[in-house]
Image 1: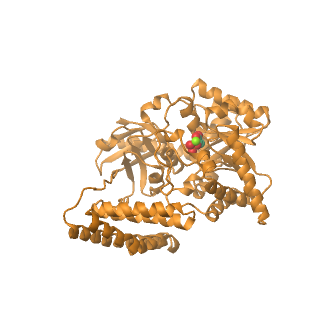
Image 2: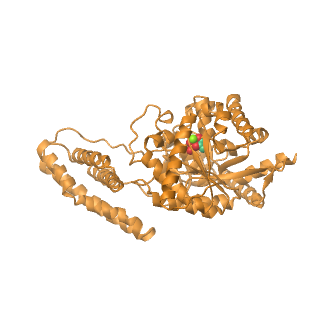
Image 3: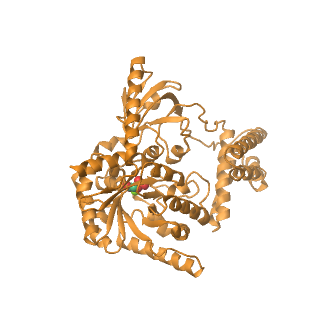
Length: 540
Ligand code: PEP
Ligand code: MG
């Protein structure tokens, strides 16, 4: 038995697939044989052309024509003289390797294109990056990412980025295991949303298993058994049976609303990262959406989502929720969430750096595009807008001012905007919790982001399994900040939710109820068990 940190509950029996991390090292030594290098490049270009055609056909058949067009534009880049001829010139004139030439021309073109303030050019820059990296992989003989084709696959990796996780095919992947990571890393949160059992922080699990090994994954207790005995498999099948029976029973609570002794409703909501997650919140009886992590709309793609695209996503969520509250958080990129097409620069401490509202107040163009989309969508439901990573009242005022500007612009363009949008902040930095009373005079609501609040309060990286023993939601200093936030809000007549993972944590729920938390928002899969626990406590 090998233990790790349980990141997403559930059980799975499957076969191991080890996902390798591929490091690309560009060869910058002078080459001897120029003709051979040009031939190498031509061969790589041919393979690239064939791969792109295969991908184009696959996506056209499985997803749609429109989605396949990106590969057509990638094919066009291969015939662009500005690109390929320039790389060949470099090989001839400077005796550099084919991979070095492609990488250098790519960087030059991308810098020029990204400096032009035009969305179309930025999209092309992202395309050039994608194609160039594919050509380089082909020159170096690095295989394309393997597609998982077998059912009941347990993916084992050193680490999975949120975008790797998003790409997992839920029909084939029955669990994942990683060497590193913590319970509140975004891959773990996504695993819970996708209902894929996951264990993180397993140290060297990639070294211990082999491809094709049979493995039992106990995501509830956070351990695996490799190549189990028949008796162990039998025992495991019993766990799975009773786990599923318990889940079935909880379904009876789907439409139950919860009121405390003073007849105040306690809302149990769901966290989502995409429009398709809404159905799961509704199926699990969520009273609303307490957090829409909009940054996932910006990820797994090669360009910024346009105002129109974002508007459509927000409208879909608001319409599906049919008047129930929907808290949409503005872009929270940075930390462990990166965008390939937006260079944030290397940072020593990304979680303390240029992220979330800090980035949006600096890149007002990006921020305004999102705010306009949100305001336009506001008439389709009960929208509440929330700013992440607020540390000072000035940041909130600045963000609110930009929101107001967007509203006035839209109104002058003749666009109808709801006049009852609540505007709140995430309380996830200790300074905001300490100043809760001051903030509460100006904001409409708070949502406590404990995933970050805990790491900042205890100076303990939420992603690092080596310090996970310090990451304690029930630490008295964390509880004290939570209480201060709730009391500060209530003193000014404002409501407080919690959208960090702690809101769905069995151990924390009784204390949060006692403090008077108004809304609990969590992974959809935790909603029913949280409802049961809260109802049981209130009955006492
Ligand atoms: C949090 O920090 O608690 C939170 C909900 O935001 P995220 O996990 O996206 O950082
Ligand atoms: Mg956060």
